[in-house]
Image 1 (spheres, rainbow, N blue to C red):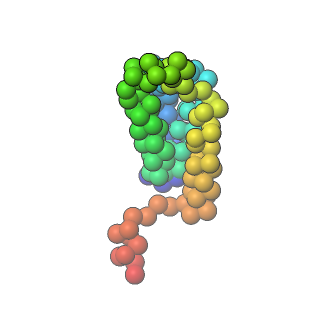
Image 2: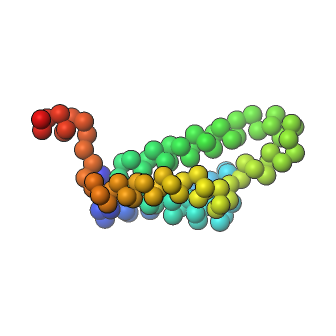
Length: 121
């Protein structure tokens, strides 16, 4: 999947929308946080296969937040409120990563596997 090609952008839109919708449904994102996550996901995934790393980070972080949430809620009364991410939390965790992905995709463009690199030498 090459960065910013039409099929990559269509795929990125569909995946980002699905993940944001899933986040609202599972109460890990607020509606405004879902909009921010859709934009972040679209930009990240449309940069190529490397964009899935940020998506993996989101999924792992969501699982970690929900892990033993009942025990956390009994220890801290504000734990339930912090499990639902808003747009500021989405941007704080992903803005730098997305910015570097876009810069990398613009300057270096085509993705190569290590097999391609070794075969050319």
